[in-house]
Length: 199
Image (cartoon, rainbow, N blue to C red):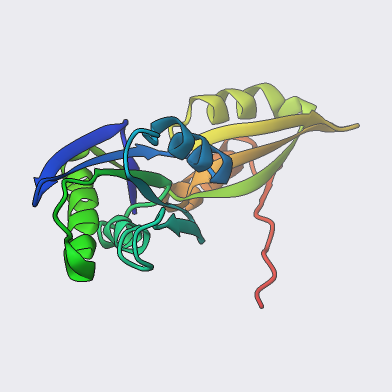
């Protein structure tokens, strides 16, 4: 999966109608709504949009016939294996009707062209882990975790006997980080990964 590096735009004309796609990385539903609100042109005939953040997604045809704008934009996002992305395609009507198929191609094609041209970033899957250590090992564990490129410390709390870290660890580096924690503390520190209940 990938996301976008920055805001990207793409313009094209289809049978005298002008289309402008604006795409951007978004962190969640509220960010997607804000992006759409900020990039819709109230002077245009239609501002159709779609966004996806993980399993959440929304799309809107903004007055175009149902299924001819928002859904093709979402399909352009999904078709390029993107996540955390919102796209607004604005249309200024040029006087020539495009028909349902023409609208699907115009909206989906404008969004897809914008996304193809955009610089993409791979989405790094991280696992949340808890690391507990005694005061004796605290300085060394803290130093190693804070300088390890695969580890992002989220919180640190002190306990009666030491400290507990919650860290986001790159999934493919989980075993290496676990080994590093064990090695620097001679096995005294404990690293655990909360299990998720599966339906």
